[in-house]
Length: 309
Image (cartoon, rainbow, N blue to C red; front, side):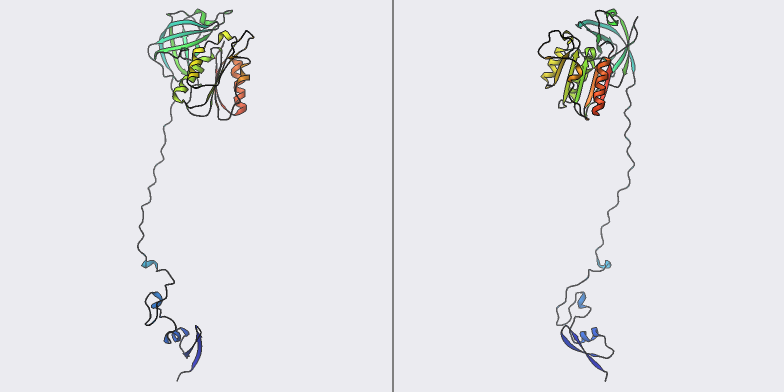
């Protein structure tokens, strides 16, 4: 007869024979479930305990494997090339005085040029040095597709090239040139001009009102004399489209209309922000001063020098 000893399992005394393991003795006495019951099948007369481990990997349903996306080649957008200058021939068809110091000249070309507002062209007329000018619109906003409208500075005391140009003169035009063209998008648009520098500013302002009617815009327009503020029809149109911040400035102390402020022009430029886009056209002193203001504020600035403005 084999030796026995006592073992307490779950508070009950179990007799264990020599050579038996405590687990075997507990199973013999029905104290715990069989290993089969521990995996889901109950031992006779006993409820099966809940499984304590998840089924092995072999018992899990196969997982659906989604195909990985294949690497796509990088898309390279083509660079937008700058518009190459082209040449046109034409004729001077109109000459008229807008003010004592500004003359409007219209050149009709054989075919329109690919110009953006603010671009410049090189105009060659017989007997004159080539002129770098900015095409614009008439002050009432009109122009034909094959017309180039220019504002020429004119000094009655010292007549310049504008005084020697006659209607019917042959013209050669090359353009576009320069980098001061209108660029849609960006922050507030600040337009500053003096004298005949209003030509590119008027072209940019009118285009922006059609292309970006919600864009914030402010204009500061100056002249030496109140009589040289020839752009009243243009200002009226801009105000009618919702532009309220338009400041007119005159340097001389001649009696000024109520809406014209005393100079200098740069004293009326609104405080600039980093997000502003500034277009300035006119004399060297005005262009240089506005460039300094824009650089100090970190704003983008597109200067356009107009000799004699």
